[in-house]
Length: 178
View 1 (tube, rainbow, N blue to C red):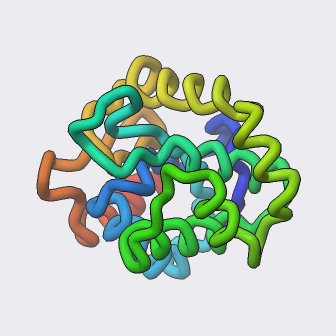
View 2: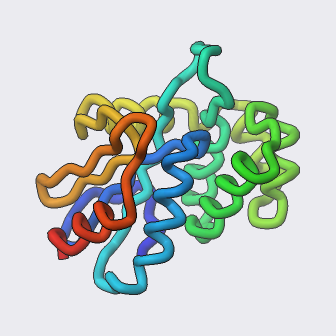
Protein backbone atom coordinates (compact mmCIF):
# COMPACT_ATOMS: atom_id res chain seq x y z
CA UNK A 1 0.00 0.00 0.00
CA UNK A 2 1.40 3.36 -0.97
CA UNK A 3 0.92 6.43 1.18
CA UNK A 4 1.11 9.06 -1.54
CA UNK A 5 -1.54 11.71 -0.99
CA UNK A 6 -0.72 13.70 -4.11
CA UNK A 7 -0.50 10.99 -6.78
CA UNK A 8 -2.77 10.64 -9.74
CA UNK A 9 -4.50 7.41 -10.61
CA UNK A 10 -2.03 5.70 -12.95
CA UNK A 11 -2.76 2.01 -12.96
CA UNK A 12 -5.47 -0.59 -12.77
CA UNK A 13 -4.88 -1.38 -9.09
CA UNK A 14 -5.15 2.18 -7.83
CA UNK A 15 -8.18 3.12 -5.74
CA UNK A 16 -9.01 6.60 -4.51
CA UNK A 17 -10.54 6.80 -1.04
CA UNK A 18 -12.43 10.03 -0.30
CA UNK A 19 -13.06 10.64 3.38
CA UNK A 20 -13.45 13.19 6.16
CA UNK A 21 -11.83 12.60 9.55
CA UNK A 22 -14.91 13.98 11.31
CA UNK A 23 -17.25 11.53 9.56
CA UNK A 24 -18.06 8.44 11.69
CA UNK A 25 -18.91 6.43 8.55
CA UNK A 26 -15.51 7.30 7.09
CA UNK A 27 -13.87 6.07 10.29
CA UNK A 28 -15.70 2.74 10.09
CA UNK A 29 -14.79 2.41 6.41
CA UNK A 30 -11.17 3.28 7.17
CA UNK A 31 -11.03 0.48 9.74
CA UNK A 32 -12.59 -1.91 7.23
CA UNK A 33 -10.16 -1.04 4.45
CA UNK A 34 -7.15 -1.38 6.73
CA UNK A 35 -8.48 -4.76 7.81
CA UNK A 36 -8.92 -6.15 4.30
CA UNK A 37 -5.99 -4.61 2.42
CA UNK A 38 -3.79 -7.64 3.12
CA UNK A 39 -6.12 -9.52 0.77
CA UNK A 40 -5.32 -6.96 -1.96
CA UNK A 41 -1.51 -6.66 -1.93
CA UNK A 42 -1.34 -5.12 -5.42
CA UNK A 43 -3.89 -2.40 -4.63
CA UNK A 44 -2.62 1.11 -4.08
CA UNK A 45 -4.81 3.43 -2.01
CA UNK A 46 -4.69 7.14 -2.77
CA UNK A 47 -5.87 8.97 0.32
CA UNK A 48 -8.24 11.80 -0.71
CA UNK A 49 -9.34 13.73 2.37
CA UNK A 50 -12.10 16.26 1.83
CA UNK A 51 -14.50 18.20 4.02
CA UNK A 52 -18.05 16.91 4.18
CA UNK A 53 -19.11 20.25 5.69
CA UNK A 54 -16.56 23.00 5.04
CA UNK A 55 -16.45 26.17 7.06
CA UNK A 56 -18.20 28.49 7.68
CA UNK A 57 -21.00 25.99 8.36
CA UNK A 58 -21.53 25.68 12.10
CA UNK A 59 -24.30 23.11 11.75
CA UNK A 60 -21.87 20.20 11.46
CA UNK A 61 -18.98 19.97 13.85
CA UNK A 62 -16.20 19.27 14.37
CA UNK A 63 -14.60 20.76 11.29
CA UNK A 64 -11.74 18.69 9.96
CA UNK A 65 -9.95 21.34 7.92
CA UNK A 66 -6.91 21.48 10.22
CA UNK A 67 -6.63 17.68 10.33
CA UNK A 68 -6.71 17.53 6.54
CA UNK A 69 -4.13 20.30 6.19
CA UNK A 70 -1.96 18.46 8.72
CA UNK A 71 -2.29 15.30 6.61
CA UNK A 72 -0.87 17.13 3.59
CA UNK A 73 1.94 18.36 5.83
CA UNK A 74 2.51 14.78 6.99
CA UNK A 75 2.62 13.53 3.39
CA UNK A 76 5.12 16.22 2.43
CA UNK A 77 7.27 15.15 5.39
CA UNK A 78 7.22 11.43 4.50
CA UNK A 79 5.12 10.44 7.51
CA UNK A 80 3.46 7.04 7.40
CA UNK A 81 -0.05 8.13 6.39
CA UNK A 82 -1.75 5.02 7.67
CA UNK A 83 -0.29 5.79 11.09
CA UNK A 84 -1.46 9.40 10.71
CA UNK A 85 -5.00 8.41 9.71
CA UNK A 86 -5.29 5.91 12.56
CA UNK A 87 -4.15 8.52 15.08
CA UNK A 88 -6.41 11.32 13.81
CA UNK A 89 -9.52 9.16 13.53
CA UNK A 90 -8.85 7.94 17.08
CA UNK A 91 -8.31 11.47 18.38
CA UNK A 92 -11.59 12.70 16.91
CA UNK A 93 -13.84 9.69 17.47
CA UNK A 94 -12.24 8.13 20.54
CA UNK A 95 -10.57 10.89 22.55
CA UNK A 96 -12.89 13.58 21.14
CA UNK A 97 -10.20 16.24 21.13
CA UNK A 98 -10.93 19.75 19.88
CA UNK A 99 -9.57 19.25 16.37
CA UNK A 100 -10.51 22.82 15.50
CA UNK A 101 -7.89 24.20 17.90
CA UNK A 102 -4.38 24.33 16.41
CA UNK A 103 -2.60 24.03 19.77
CA UNK A 104 -4.63 21.00 20.84
CA UNK A 105 -4.28 19.27 17.48
CA UNK A 106 -0.54 19.88 17.23
CA UNK A 107 0.00 18.64 20.78
CA UNK A 108 -1.78 15.38 20.01
CA UNK A 109 0.10 14.91 16.74
CA UNK A 110 3.49 15.40 18.41
CA UNK A 111 4.31 11.66 18.54
CA UNK A 112 4.53 11.54 14.74
CA UNK A 113 5.02 15.12 13.48
CA UNK A 114 7.37 18.00 14.24
CA UNK A 115 5.22 20.33 16.31
CA UNK A 116 7.01 23.61 15.56
CA UNK A 117 6.88 23.34 11.79
CA UNK A 118 3.35 21.89 11.86
CA UNK A 119 2.10 24.76 14.03
CA UNK A 120 3.70 27.27 11.65
CA UNK A 121 2.19 25.56 8.61
CA UNK A 122 -1.31 25.45 10.10
CA UNK A 123 -1.18 28.97 11.53
CA UNK A 124 0.18 30.35 8.27
CA UNK A 125 -2.37 28.57 6.09
CA UNK A 126 0.36 26.85 4.08
CA UNK A 127 -1.99 23.99 3.10
CA UNK A 128 -5.26 25.96 2.93
CA UNK A 129 -5.25 26.08 -0.87
CA UNK A 130 -4.32 22.39 -1.04
CA UNK A 131 -7.42 21.70 1.07
CA UNK A 132 -9.62 23.80 -1.21
CA UNK A 133 -8.17 21.96 -4.22
CA UNK A 134 -8.85 18.60 -2.51
CA UNK A 135 -12.48 19.58 -1.89
CA UNK A 136 -12.88 20.74 -5.48
CA UNK A 137 -11.28 17.53 -6.79
CA UNK A 138 -13.61 15.39 -4.70
CA UNK A 139 -16.91 17.14 -5.24
CA UNK A 140 -16.52 18.76 -8.65
CA UNK A 141 -14.03 16.66 -10.60
CA UNK A 142 -14.64 13.20 -9.11
CA UNK A 143 -18.38 13.63 -8.63
CA UNK A 144 -18.38 12.52 -5.00
CA UNK A 145 -21.77 13.24 -3.51
CA UNK A 146 -21.51 11.42 -0.19
CA UNK A 147 -18.54 10.18 1.79
CA UNK A 148 -16.92 7.82 2.29
CA UNK A 149 -16.47 7.22 -1.42
CA UNK A 150 -14.18 5.25 -3.71
CA UNK A 151 -13.16 5.71 -7.33
CA UNK A 152 -11.20 3.33 -9.57
CA UNK A 153 -11.10 2.69 -13.32
CA UNK A 154 -14.24 4.71 -13.98
CA UNK A 155 -16.12 2.82 -11.25
CA UNK A 156 -17.75 4.56 -8.29
CA UNK A 157 -18.74 3.49 -4.81
CA UNK A 158 -20.43 6.20 -2.77
CA UNK A 159 -21.82 5.90 0.71
CA UNK A 160 -25.50 5.88 1.42
CA UNK A 161 -26.15 8.94 3.56
CA UNK A 162 -26.37 8.05 7.27
CA UNK A 163 -25.43 4.43 6.48
CA UNK A 164 -21.97 4.47 4.91
CA UNK A 165 -20.35 1.61 3.01
CA UNK A 166 -20.39 -1.99 4.20
CA UNK A 167 -17.29 -4.15 4.34
CA UNK A 168 -18.91 -6.43 1.75
CA UNK A 169 -19.50 -3.52 -0.64
CA UNK A 170 -15.89 -2.47 -0.21
CA UNK A 171 -14.58 -5.99 -0.85
CA UNK A 172 -16.74 -6.31 -3.98
CA UNK A 173 -15.49 -2.95 -5.25
CA UNK A 174 -11.85 -3.89 -4.65
CA UNK A 175 -12.33 -7.29 -6.30
CA UNK A 176 -13.81 -5.64 -9.42
CA UNK A 177 -10.82 -3.32 -9.62
CA UNK A 178 -7.99 -5.86 -9.22
